[in-house]
Image 1 (cartoon, one colour):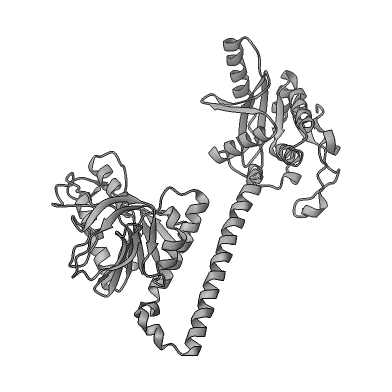
Image 2: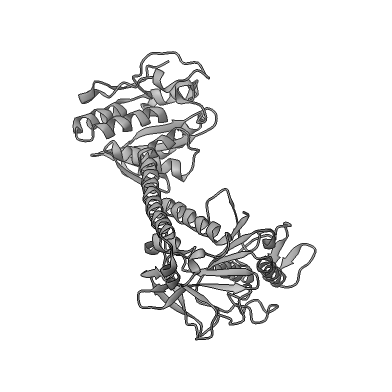
Length: 468
């Protein structure tokens, strides 16, 4: 099944994520997920010339008519309108998140353009006032539990926030699939020719792990919707005619569904636990980016430092002692120019505070290689300079060992004090005592290398490398 998502990030290899501007032809897919608010924001950004986007053919999208070097915004939107119509004409599925309607008067070449102009809605025109009205709330419940969207709405009810409600008249052919606690229709399904539109409440603010659970449930719902009409759409009284075998089968299905929900919940909890317990491992391979900086800061906090990050760079404090920290993560050896950056910051601190802080470099050279077989990740010139001026170089593998020791000895403050003292006294490369064993590349076995635990309380010491 081919799925495209417009303006709603759905992290999955089975989904093509695009914006309204750069998406390929929507009618080539079986299902489309669309966030009308995200589309509105992009329309306004292009119309105001504050958003620089390109069409799939590489031309810039601008106001006005299309030309040889640019694509007209109105023409793009009309094209998307036709593509969505073709998707539904082919029996496709359109999932949209319901927001109040708004006008887009800044696109004069598309008269009457509003947030839902691109959506080929049913004849009842449910996406305009007064049928669709602003609302806000989180308490909702599915009205047809066995509907394909029932599990999605139930499992994520605490993470969905309805922004609009539908006020259908008696003649409406819409199927209400969720209501607020006060009875307002906040999710509905519409038939549009051979296709279907399912309007749902959008997600509230989601963390990365919550976004993954949201996406998984959303894709499961789409797969069920694509399977065709629901058997459970039969009237409730039809169950009075169940045979004993049918009743037993329904009970077995309900039990299996409950078991599946429990398993999915345990999987989500286990995934979160894995993320939490392995977060420091990323310092061993992460490239130099914000995530790398964050995990290094967290590591120093575990060691008992107070960490601050200003525009000039990271600083750590141990009581009255301040150290400035420079970070580097590279595919090859760490650049020796990092010393110059560190020295410049130290001199600035001295001129401003009349005290000279310690300098620390945290380096992740040859980051794509197993740390046990990395060869000379720090240039000799960098090591010599740091040894001369009393600066510490902490390889990420050493920092990882230290933070692991500190985590295990969290109730032994003397262990943390010993680690911080070792860092304060280090000149050059800080090394952690490991079992002396030569490891050849391609022959690394995790069971063959044993880390020695730290000193105070566990028998190990972080020792600075000898010069040379």
